[in-house]
Image (tube, rainbow, N blue to C red; front, side):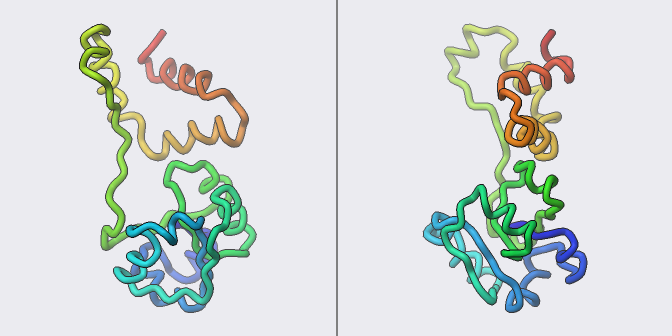
Length: 165
């Protein structure tokens, strides 16, 4: 989850547990899917004990970041690699009870493709230490906020890391 940096700092909120004591005065928003999922809103509330003043269901995922920035919603669900977090000066709160599983980007490739492309496995493994959430946020911003083509951004990134010529 994420919220405006100024509000988080004012309330002293860094973790989901910190948020619990303030939730009754805050609004929460997310898309309908989050409220319908078994690992979504209800489970989160059961785990932490949130009692939000108001919850906004079915807000378009693309609009919730702007709604948070504008103060229309205080707390939103967020993807840690979304460039709008940085653009709108939001902070991602720490899930200190580990309600959500860790999501890590990993390459998945068929063995026959690896066999047909010597060196591919080694090249993909090099990404493990350099393709962090912060780097993915930056790359996503180049595509989603600056309008660059994904292929162009990927090639520029791989060149800058010395992975391709």
